[in-house]
Length: 154
Image (cartoon, rainbow, N blue to C red; front, side, top):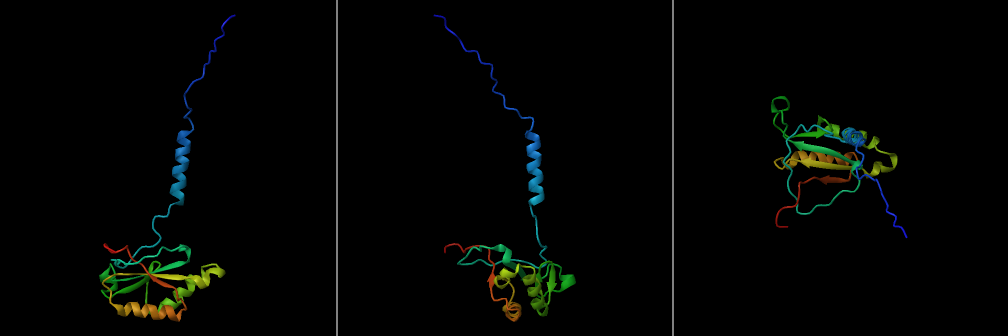
């Protein structure tokens, strides 16, 4: 009986010629889909800490209102101002702004609009109360206050 030996000539090299193409496609994909910043904040923001937090489920229904001292005090003064989107608003313009934000949503989601107020911790309650009154007039009843995180020890 004769012994037969198997001779295999398989190489263990992995072809890497398409690897640079794949890397550049991934890089291009992430460059196109990444949003760096939606709005430029024109007011100072030192957000207070909270004792209880709740994570939001549907962030597409949230419109943000920033209240704080303007960064450019020479142009806007030193009194607290209200910013929505990329513009500073007067309290009388808030109802119109809420209606525009509501109209931008799908019709089924319009009653679910939520206003997130990011208020500087040094702002007095007067401007905040004025904004709350205007939000009530605009029938924007879902209001939440943003904070940075839980206070240590709680």
